[in-house]
Length: 373
Image 1 (cartoon, rainbow, N blue to C red):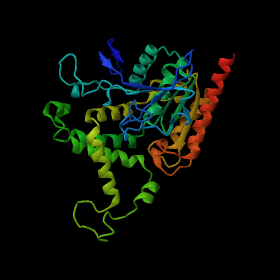
Image 2 (tube, rainbow, N blue to C red):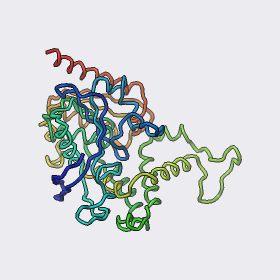
Image 3 (tube, rainbow, N blue to C red):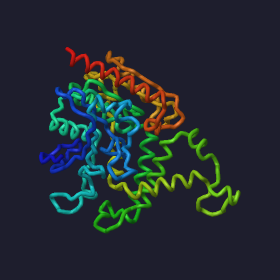
Image 4 (cartoon, one colour):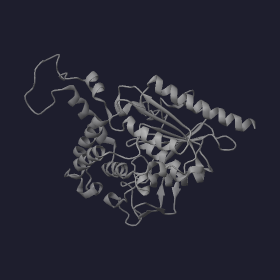
């Protein structure tokens, strides 16, 4: 969907003539009351569920959550996935041509915030004729967007589902993001962000950035169980190589993840999205008071966290819950004892899936009641 009217950004800059890539699943009902917006995390996209015809490895990033008969059941709900501005999966981003110059935006692409993405999503909803979502849902960075929807457009969602997220990043999280960015910024192939014109990609920087990030998505217990101190070639040679190559299975795994990521993700997009993560702090406008920040919300909430998620820990989710309860909002909170760290929100923990399914069952009953009335 193309938008000609400029979007004013929180930075003071504007972006016009931009495109948002989106996918929909299920059928929008007559009064457009069964729409659910799913917001994506850092390296995901609009392709939330399903597989493209003839592309067996094209499964959507939340396919276990969204689809016919799944917790977010597309037999009952009309689900929308939107690729955010600045991303590299179809929506206008740094790799696209700047209408003003005819060359790729590169480093000239404006910095974005979570709130900018939400404003763009609201424009898309306007075009689709959706005045109010049955729910806005997201995990991690997507959860930040869902929370922002409840603050920015309180009349436009009935339920807000925030999973494995936080009301702001800790200093440690910001530090990890900056280390990852520095890996890209110092790659000789980055060329100040204008590497497209040089016909190269800062693959080494992207690889290291992904390796740093991936470490934070896993728990220590999960890493220990999967890899421990196993040597890569233990079956052939149960000894160290005594060089700076790969000795351990965990090293091999991280390098594989880094290499794969550097083949499909855009370096400027990585910089933009991690900076948007850092900037997210809606309570900043209220002197750090999260309760005041959420005072104008009207939605009902499902907040979920995972015990071994040390990146966005349960304590941060509880902050959101307590701030909502102080405003007498209806809140369901689930703290799932899962071993998988931050990545747990993407996995098939039975208790987690049951919580989300039960919550959507409740939303479906509400919709059925309205239709009967």
